[in-house]
Amino acid sequence: SVPKVSKICCIGAGYVGGPTCAVIALKCPHIQVTIVDLNQARIDAWNSSDFNLPIYEPGLEDVVRATRGRNLFFSTDVDGAIRAADLIFVSVNTPTKKTGIGAGYAADLNYVEKATRRIAQIATSSKIVVEKSTVPCRTAESMRVILEANSKPDARFDILSNPEFLAEGTAISDLVSPDRVLIGSLQTHEGKEACKALSEIYANWVPQERILTVGLWSSELSKLAANAMLAQRISSINALSAICEATGANIDEVAHAIGKDTRIGPKFLKASVGFGGSCFQKDILNLVYLSESLHLPEVAAYWRQVVEMNEYQKRRFTRHVVDTLFKTITGKRIAVLGFAFKADTGDTRESAAITIIKHFMEEKALVTIYDPQVEHEQIWMDLQEVSPTFTLQQIKRQVQIAPCALDACAEAEAVVIATEWKEFITLDWEAIYEQMSKPAFIFDGRLLVDSAKLAKIGFKVSSIGRGA
Ligand code: NAD
Ligand code: UGA
Image 1 (cartoon, rainbow, N blue to C red):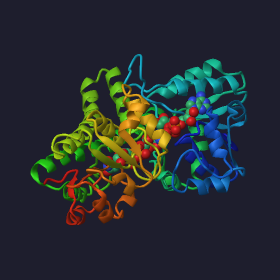
Image 2 (image 1 turned 60 degrees about the vertical axis):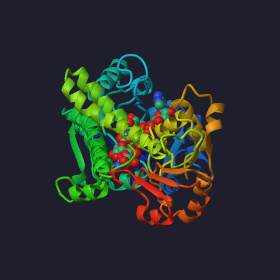
Image 3 (image 1 turned 90 degrees about the vertical axis):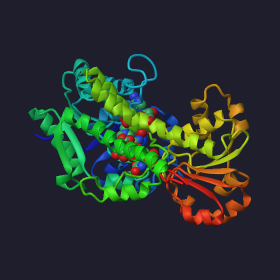
Image 4 (image 1 turned 180 degrees about the vertical axis):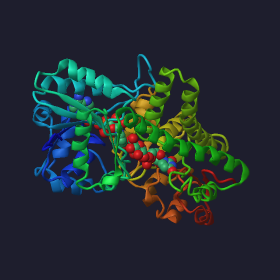
């Protein structure tokens, strides 16, 4: 019979675990959801009385306000939540390994394994264990071996793969009306029953035809495949943006023209200064490593090129800034608008802005940053991490953080738009122009602002994918 789920535990209260399980709690008032984490500060923020949540995500606060204390709880009592739960989401981080075998490519599965071992050690009754984290294909097999080797006599474990497809900045709407929910299970009787139990949870708000049930390995691979193909579209359009700049073609026109083909489609064809975020690069490198481990070097090289093109795009952009500013930016003031990896998030992981500013620092420019969401502490941490040869003091000699865009641009020689925050479109560009050194340059890395209008004000505008 299909296992009954009345209590859910989610291990990992991050960008995925938090919003995902908050929405489950919202849509399933009959289920008690407890999100646990080892990080006390993070849990305290989720529990804060003024709803100063650890992540910024439009609509998230409303969901947490509606559910917290009702059927949604945040706690550091990992063991207690495991013990009580019928179903456990493993939603921990799976970063790229920094050292050891596969360093720079393979996913670090140590957090998944620790969480799995904890479940095995603590559980005294049967559990459905759900991989929510993005993992290499066949990770569920390792989890099964660990769980079975450590389980108590009355506890059996069924493992499901249920990768998450939400994008940051739109997490709540993505979760409330997903394109699809993917559930992978072993094709055994028990596997299928567990799969049904999880489907029934989603069926509380997701139409049945959007809940896809597949084999475990297909599910795991589909997640890597989806991210790889999304990122590949961006690298493709960015590669074309370089041709546009050299020929006078306009990348927006090209993207629009090709996107009208229903086989290609219009989404995810926005040329940019390069994709960022915690997952695209990590997941492609993970796919590259998987391909290499399977002795498929041509496949590995194919996907690696998507990441290499992204690095190229960031380098190309910085070089263009330096070249345009008469081949030197030493001592010149450059305003960088946006530090997050995309709009509507405070997340900076792998943000293109970090790489660009690092290059500017190496060229000895003076950089002033403004971002409407990112915490200042985070900016200093990111810049220190990317430039280990600089001390924080040295960084602060070259870099400042401004409280608003206007201040960031004051006396600058150039403005660089690194994140597509909507508020940058409607800035008082005339006032900004007045306060800048002349000639005043704008480098639009996001095709965000109206270049004709800015040129009329007097700016010298350079946009990604638009020739002079
Ligand atoms: P995150 O770093 O924000 O959150 C992970 C949390 O897990 C951290 O707070 C960490 O303290 C906690 N944790 C680690 N080990 C633990 C343990 N043993 N017990 C309890 N807590 C533990 O990461 P994230 O962005 O939420 O990503 C989680 C996973 O989801 C990754 O595999 C990622 O690839 C995938 N994913 C992320 C996104 C996204 O938009 N960020 C989207 C889809 C999938
Ligand atoms: C991405 C995927 O879109 C999600 O489906 C997936 O669940 C998630 O990764 C994950 O696995 O973590 P996310 O990274 O949050 O989501 O945000 P995206 O909207 O995909 O943007 C990623 C980067 O690509 C951003 O830097 C964005 O600015 C850039 N981008 C996006 C472009 O440069 N051009 C585009 O057309 C679209």
